[in-house]
Image (cartoon, rainbow over all chains, first blue to last red; front, side, top):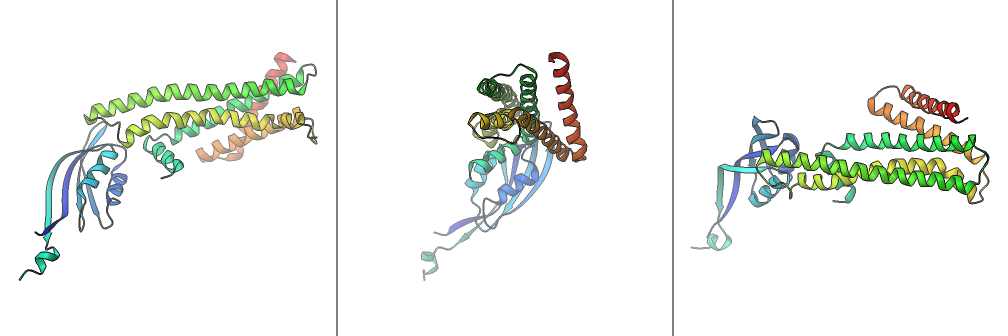
Length: 96
Length: 193
């Protein structure tokens, strides 16, 4: 069976003002070695911000991303976009 | 991550660097003026034993340290708890396991240590000549006068530190704090001399 890799996710997150957008995006980018993070602030309230995060990478570790979001006090509201690609395993590659 | 980095990060997250710095200066100044007052008081009083003066100053220094630790801890815990519960209300989420929860728990402790250590450290520096003389080490100036010089020097340095924070003339800021110390000395002379 082919192995799947998450290449891109777009997440809707509610987060406190601190850490700010720059620090938040930097911390998420540090989760993986080749992650590219794009953050958009959608709404600002008195104590919170609603943000949209787009993470792209060769193989995104979603659990690690979610842990980091929780660690920074954020709350994942929804997964809006997911891009996954499959890669044939060595067994499937050698099948006739 | 080592303890120092973790503390720095929690202070940054709680935006408490300024508070810790303010507490350090305010309480360091408290310690310096208290020791200056005690020493001027001893200079104006009939001669007494060095160990008595040292014990009185050490007692005041320890009390200042304890007062700094306990007062800052109690007030900071209350403030941080309130801020965290307000944030939890806004987030509709328990934040105890997040960095915000850790900051609410540890920042009061860090600030309390700064608040208590500043007057204790400054006081111990000022009374060090008394301690050295009591240990039998001969000094080039009388220990009480050397303690007064040290007190003025530390007060000037606290002023310089404040000046650098505020990005104003450090000489002006240093002189300003020395003038406060001189006024304190003059008041002690007027009321006790």
